[in-house]
Length: 261
Length: 295
Image (cartoon, rainbow over all chains, first blue to last red; front, side, top):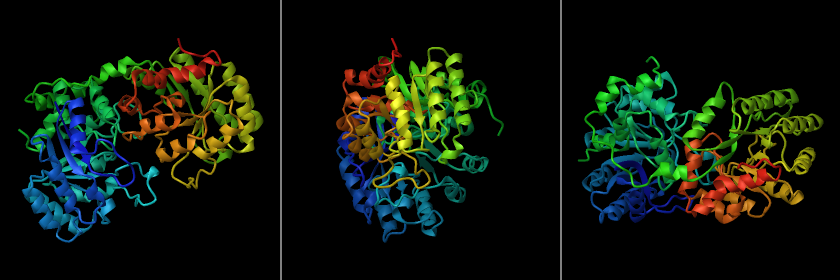
């Protein structure tokens, strides 16, 4: 059984989704043998005040104890974020997903630093996503911003104790990235790395595993934004890896990071 | 950190000891490898780039059980004058070499720049005589609707050869300013009306553009095919393409995105027969017109 660290419920503003409810995710999880899914509410990306989205998420997963690992969406530049964070923690949220590119702040904003400190104090991992969909296809209402790994480096270096998850598309490409990442509590999901040696992304999963070690990788699908099968293939094809290392990526690393028994 | 080769990495004590305490692998109910094996596949849109890519392509195709790959070496410069006949010939020679090196695995696609009319037609004749199956990936030097393109398309009709063109449909009412020669979905519709007998393929509906816009536009072009490749693997994309274009006009391809190329088709809510059509039968039917079909 696997743990998927990258799923969503809720609406994406620019495209209709299927399976974007707790029930929809459970159907996906049953088909693909996913024991638990880390989930956030996409609506929190688009609401000015994100807290109702977090409350919607808590209500949506309440009937299914033990199946979901809720992540809150918090905007550190919006009024009352600290109260929201604490409320989410009390609701059982295990981590945060942050969307500076949609919430109109820069990674250098000191308010982000305060949120990361607070997350560290609450022992909540913080996830960033490079983009929700390929910016080339973006809506005319989408700001079209993407998080760049170079911009993220000071955040990583400045918060060595905070557990960070980089969701999709953000992998190291320079020696400097590797140096900073190796010293950090940083994890990567497998949404975009390529299973094969070639690909336009340039990210070959086995190559990344060589550079960073399998203990830093978490199985993620991106469902229902992304198709659910490609992520399965990506890991299944890593036949050269020790099977137990593969299993660590399927679930063991997430179990450890998110303290799942 | 010194680079390790795969074997030493996998055998490394650190990896083994780190994973030793982990639980035993569990079975997963969806047998994705069995699903991959279930379908014969021809990839109608792939590429060969130096150095030594042919061997890697075959290795990757083997992992996904792809029998044959249509490969090209397009010159991607947006400046038409830089895609010279000599450069195109050199690129096509690399494709021809791959056909020789790996007999039976590759289908050659000839790249030309329609701005060089006479030389382009000569190069098409040379490549087809040498065993290529069609044109591809025609790039963004000249728009499909440009009259300089017409003799190229007419030659393809005469040869019953498919023409795969880069689909440059990005966003509604927007054309990449640095690639004015890129062909959008609207251009494909227009050229499909002018040449309904041509076998024209819109390259990569998942190539990064607004695929809903592209598919809805191509709905009005019943003779245009579209391939499913590109790095975008949005859930529901293939299903939407089927609703707009029908199964018959969709062709499996990866454009070097191997696992997502296969994954997005396996994920689509299709019958086994429909998947068979897209993975294999549709493109094989196109190849059959010139006697190049796969048995």
